[in-house]
Image (tube, rainbow over all chains, first blue to last red; front, side, top):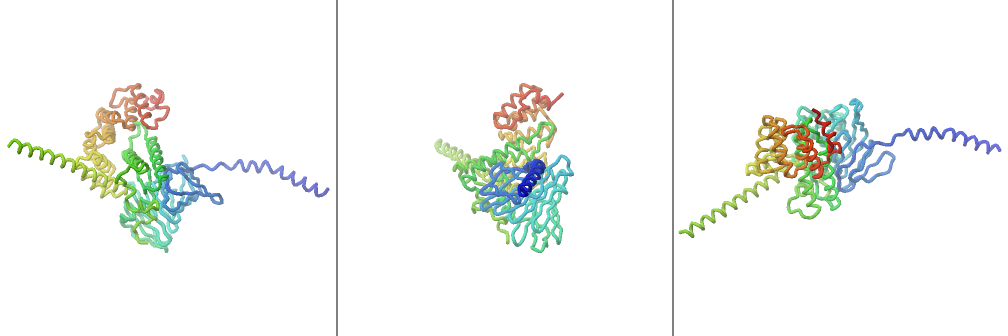
Length: 311
Length: 184
């Protein structure tokens, strides 16, 4: 009898708690996608802390706190809600720690943490809204970016952080526990040693710059990347088509003067789509601009993150 | 004597054709090298290669070079020079160049503002099948800018743009939607 009473009491307590539990579960908002995959090659996965690994494909969503991992001969390009674009080369890892894009500018925030690999960013709205709130971390540094296209190549022994393009008047600031350097022109980079020491920014060697672009190509900029497998090529053609449609959708009416750079990128993307179609259909001659450029056809989806640079 | 003369003339014509062909092929090679460098963000090399090709009157190179001047990529920004290069390319029926030259004229970039001239170039590009140009032409008709305002023409070009692959929003295929953009 006593046993039964105990069970009834326990059941009663549980029943009382049930609505609260349900509320608590309901109160958890469904995770909002913060961006989507706009192009990729090879194999790319995403994983939430404590969650299962998801295979990504074109148009797959990504979420805050996802850890993105690219395999060998792989790369991925992601467009975030604020139009920040990001590309990651082979055998690389990044954690999308925080991402908030809000009409309340002071609430917008981006914090991504890079592990080893090759990474590129083209800044979007969050940087325009609130430059201080856009931060990228490598194991050794924090990169503050304002109106720029920075890159990072992270290996076990050193990091190279540089700028591919930069809006006039803007600055990329890189801070380690030991030093801070600033770069205010495109084509500059700094090398970071394991102790956090940083070299004076100097022109990035063509091999390193090419290596970064080949490892982490951006179809949003019309770049073609390595040739890849037949599946990769099919995906690439789709990626260009979708990117082109997206770029066209961004064009306003006559009230907003068109961005000539954007219009030009559209035509470059269109040419690149044609080239990718030729590659896919096996009809290209020696036209491959992406495939035969440094590191492309070495078959690892681009160079392993540093091209010919000393490691 | 007559045969000699004919032979020499033929040789001359052949030589000239081959030379033009060579020049045109050289221009194409330089343009491709320029594009390869441009996609690597090696603007210095891209500028050199495009300039070489542009000098051979390669329309594609002239277009790319124009944009480098317009954007200050690898060269000091110079909209007037961009406009000149666009014109050379546009006159060779390069549709992207025609569209951009048209917009330069609409907005007075690199040239004095001349909406009618702008509309003319955009119209050429649209007629050639450029869907972005069709979209802009539709906007010009809806706004009455550079052309006489005409909703029927605007809607026609919007539909053509959509049929050619431009992602036209549904509202812009209606008179009400277009009117909302360009209220008098």
